[in-house]
Image (cartoon, one colour):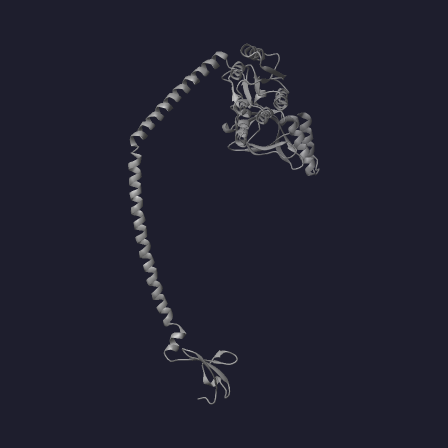
Length: 408
């Protein structure tokens, strides 16, 4: 502090002009030396991630705000994605960005306030995958009945695998089981599980997959909450049973899988049911079939009896039908005659009207039609003729060729 006071006093006492860069560096050095790293609580706003992968945001409360940055190397380890409106705890140091002279926080650690980071990451991924349709019930496939070959992706060191193998062997020792070993917790576990699902599901060697592990804490089960596992389950070519932890444990894998078993043991019991249970189910189905057949037969008998009662004497029905046919035939003939008479009357009336409009009828009343030769034009005006023109005159009966001697 003594040295720093001396520096400030020197600038005050000495009439030296500072450049902006020098001023910003002085402020930055003062803050870096005197303000240690500290925890800050606030609400995130203006959150953005440029192509560089750094986190830029504003941290604020109801009265003030400050710019903040979390570089990619620190942010890559976060289990959750920061969001606007989220209240967080930041472990950071205060400094100045010399280029613009901006005061800002350089964040080293970031935690959601009021809930764990893993729980928040779980909810964020759950919302994301649900919006994409990975949890839709209609896309889930039915499990095969008594599969010939069963694939299991889990740790070969866990008790869960031993329990599943024991149950499958006790119930159906002829079933083929293919185990794909994988880490089920810790760094890299999610990628190993996803690779196991991809390899077994795409191999064509198994009819169904069991993916899971025994119980544990949220941290222990976290590999089954990662996106890479969820997408491998979704893309699997065969149905997938998720069997993670205990009955109270739920993971993202449970929501994506075609079937969720509460425990690995329950998964094995689901994929290969007991012979006695199948036999009892067959007997129950047989009894239901017999009951259904008896009911169908009784309904058929009742229907037959009703038809017999409603069925009349065929000969009587035939006579009635013949009589009705005769009546309809006579009615049809009468209608036909009336219609012919009506049409005949209309034809006569139409002929009369047509004859009245005919030019021949006009000729019958003493008129004639003159055509100028050789053009065959009807003469409507005497002025159109010259002395000596030939004219053909048409009468009601016959025609005459005349020469024009004079005209009026």
